[in-house]
Image 1 (cartoon, helix red, strand yellow):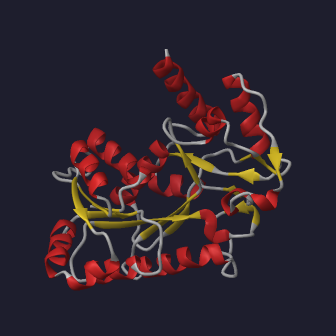
Image 2 (cartoon, rainbow, N blue to C red):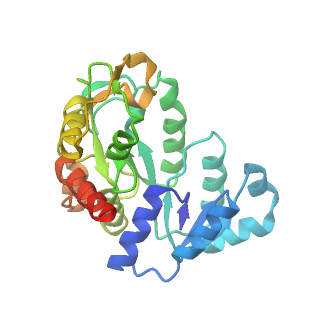
Length: 282
């Protein structure tokens, strides 16, 4: 059961369909959009339209349908926190048995923390952008969810390479701040292992094995794509997710769950993306 049907959930769906490691007969996903529901149906996922928090609180039929879909199921929570929905879904799920529960959080909970980030690093509770995430983590932790704090995500269809090709990307400041990332296929691999071998209630940071500066990653991609380096803009003018200077050490989750990454650094990951891009463009 996917509570939220964004890129991460669909990457996990693709992984589980391929490996059949969890032996899932039917996939469900919540969505707020009728158009998105049609897309999910086309993929082989049964959609459940949940358009508003009030609908969850007043519709007995919707509540029953969600509980039936989640009962004895593996549940992945990946929707962004809004201050309402996490608690509503938690209250609904606490009444039924689950096969497993994983919550995808964000390394944004570390806010202004800089340098090496691992499971022992203090979160930044003073940072407003981290507040909702931390509240959501606590809500799902009350059901012993395994929590994965993920950095920037990318794959062939989504990421920095496409922003550079579109001409929309601007380098944050001098580009010397570090950023961490993980390929969506590797995140899906970790989530699958979490359902199979994860310890309920655990919290991990997730990332590939080579955090790198914006400047070095952009330089690598521009060289491979034959593009000029983009202009830079003041660091304070970019989205808060691009202002961080964090190097995520995600080795513990790989060791505990016995996972090896298919794309251990941005070099392998973006090479794969660019090879697919070149192939699809020819």
